[in-house]
Image (tube, rainbow, N blue to C red; front, side):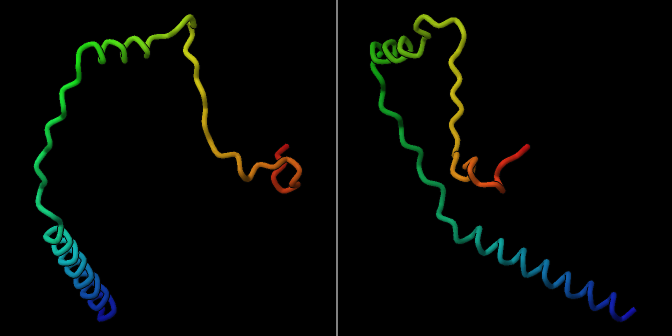
Length: 82
């Protein structure tokens, strides 16, 4: 019984300390900065950008998958999957 009571007490102390640390972290954050206004973009520049995003002659979209291929050397026997 005493072991359970001690466990609950330690858990409550850890919870209170965690919440106090979180509250101190929140108070240490800087105040909300003012939101800067975006500079206006000319209409012809927006039209050129939208025109460049349209597909050229291709009906189907081109999909490219980019990823790292560092540790997949097929000459390494441990990396060969069958």
